[in-house]
Image (cartoon, rainbow, N blue to C red; front, side, top):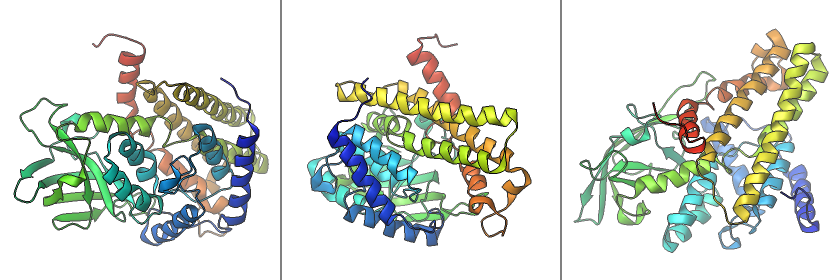
Length: 386
């Protein structure tokens, strides 16, 4: 693994840094998980797109820069270092888009990707169901063939759809052959959330945001053009999406490097005892270790390799790291940690508590860590099933 940067990569980093320093809002935007914040974040995403920073690794034809994976990592580091807003478009550009590049038709890519990059269409993920959370193969939402109209009629319920209350589209799995084995007979659909028969119900959260949603589908028509990867091929397509979710794209090292740097600064501002000092140092070391591990993965991919079951290692590491860093911050702050953003004495506008509440979800979403540890044991370490 070569950690040195070429002159072109250094120039790319510098260009990104200068643009972000000049354009990142001086006042943090409201949470992108409520209606007001979501609208403001959509404007920010459009600004990124207009400057060709929204999807740097995509082809230029879709608004990208054709950047390498190394350059994408550099951009992500600069993005989080600059304190730029959260990406409300992340489920589309980091999860669905790689799946479209691999399995989508040319017509689907041309129709969907430019609008996704510009945040004209923002996507939610429709995986979990009330009876199928970690066990995705247990889903029961169904799709019935409608030959007369050339498509499918979808029924069922999807739950815990991130920002689903505000998004325009949803991607997800539905059973198209109920007689097939558990991991077969499913199809990957792209579903407009304003279609007749769709009901979106916001789910309140502990932090007050209303972005999470239950999505109810009652005989919703979806044309064949919105089937991704072929009928009954949904499991294979979905596994490509989850590999992106747990592997490189959803949680780049830049996010955790920036959090670790903020934690170090917090410790300097408020002082720490020996135990907490060790926790702060560990956060810095672990964030750097994650950066190096990701660069090793990028090197393998650029040399023609792929990301397989090792993505589960990745997911467990970053999700547990996120919880540890925020928990350490709350200990440093003590009683001050409970002050919310509009309190006069709130530290960093209450960001550490809000970040902690979100971090607690990390070991659950993208496949619970308990399930990921089983995958690691069986597929990475080769241990027998019990």
